[in-house]
Length: 427
Image 1 (cartoon, one colour):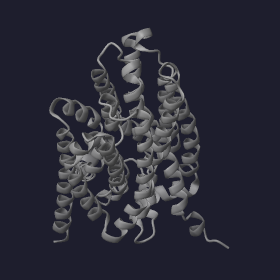
Image 2 (tube, helix red, strand yellow; image 1 turned 30 degrees about the horizontal axis):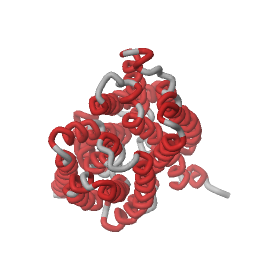
Image 3 (tube, helix red, strand yellow; image 1 turned 180 degrees about the horizontal axis):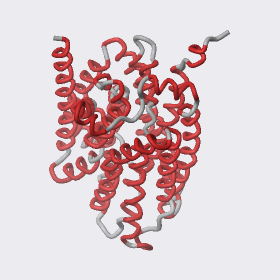
């Protein structure tokens, strides 16, 4: 007969399934918007501007979600205190789905004028608030329940949703772009992925609620003190760890948009190959990233997660030096940039989440990990397409090199600082 402790035990594999499904759904929403920011929004919402200027404005709206995401996290924590984790997650994911679905029905600028842009901005803000509020603590629980010597592997599983979400979003847009003429694509075709995102959110919601509201999971979450804490106390006592954690993974987050959204805009504005062909290359890149992530888990368990992040930050810095050469070398160079970049993204992003979460005291870990992730997105990825495209047009593609190098440098400095802090604590 199984003991009560055995019945209440949490299988890491069960947690991993919920984490992958939930994150893949969120990333699908994320990339549907990102790809549409290049292929659709400049023509639909900024037709009165030049294509470059319209794309830059689209990227500015893209960044809104990351700016408000920490606010969504704090509001979500308050909802959880008052009504429970399940209510918070339900509200957040329905807000995400409704915001995404509403984008699909917004009339064009030619019909609504500036109200269309305002509606798009409000929906993007809704997405950001929802993404912040959807933090459920499952990645932390997964890491804490991972077998000894396997934390790198299980940490990677929580990140696997990124290439899966991009793969689905990019494949869907590639199909629509290739199957429809430009008039049909811009009039109704682009709206379909946003409706599909709502359906995926519903599936993901039930998958995650199945975990977070059951007795075994609630008990395990409480035992590990994975509940909201007082935010003022957190910043007063361990606020430095939030910023240290955000900068420790900055190289991965900086690379995130540089190989997904930015190059698509560059190829559209300065075409050396067709968009359909380039989307196909990005699909292959997403598959390579998904394949590289398990390797990151094996590597992290062998040499340590922080050593893995540091080594890959160095590799990203070296890769950045070749960025202007590759992107300015026609379709072959651009394809090499995408494929190599996605491999590096898979290896680095696989270990980017919670690399220094262990620095937090147990009762600060839940809120601290959420805010660390928010700031990583804000500092590393939020403005990457806007900055990279704007500066590249004005100063050349070396601006992308500088951007990636700055992210790599921040990661290496943060990891070195963290190491020094650990040695000091031991003394």
